[in-house]
Length: 369
Image (cartoon, rainbow, N blue to C red; front, side):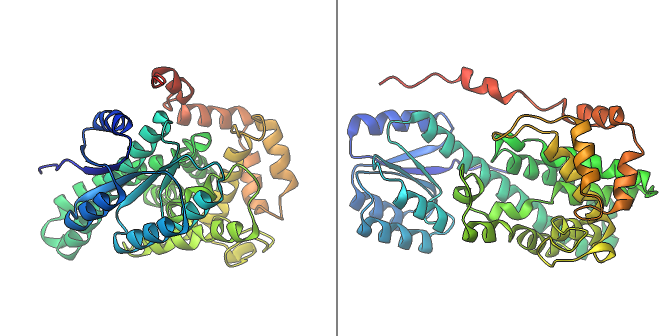
């Protein structure tokens, strides 16, 4: 398969900065088309439909430009838009991010931020395009699976790998939760095994559901998902949509019921105070009840920017305190039947492959002023 070089349109009126930014972006193996004015950019976008990204250096974000950006996104929904603006007030930029009109906002002189934004958008496009190809091939093969079983099995392996890569990409949207999906998948399988679920296929279905549990967050804007402060009621409503959004994504590929149950019901609570359907007790699928405890165990024992890491003894106390309310008592008993040292070993073996992302910044040189 011939891989075509992606084309990026760069708008920057300042000639020196335009060339500097173009050289930076070209290190990502893309074709950068330069524009010196807004009018020239619109002509190029109208005549060329193969632009993947539009990096727009704007002197201001007035109402006319915001309206044009909105129209551009509506007519070209697959075009990623990265705006470079010196505007001091954050409100217009936040509104554009929340509405999905633009994908990233950075200062024109913040070269590291611009580079990261472009790389992120290119990676997202590559991953989604690969996943779409795999899904199309999988559907096509399943129509004729009896004639080509071996090929279908090979594609299932590719698809499974794609799922893990997709979840890794989603984890990377927030470095603080990197590796979360892989860890809770292993915890869920261990709990299921303790509860007597030994069938390899059933355990693998639980693993897949755990890996995919937050896939719906791919549809939640970064402005909401990564907001450093408290969320508004409207923003919480958007966050609470992710189980249903994720279920909607996977039901089209006809995954087994257990996978969909975890995705849709992983925020339900045993006492019926969860979401999205306020299910309670045995009304919540067993695999979702298992996952809920695994998810909490990882959340409690992982680093978060707003608190220090807590140990497994603290986690056990909190889980016991919420037995019968947040968690199924049967699942809590299964968790407590395994020594905490064993749980710590499971975590270490699952996360030992994760790279040290804190050292990444040392590899990047600050741009010359």
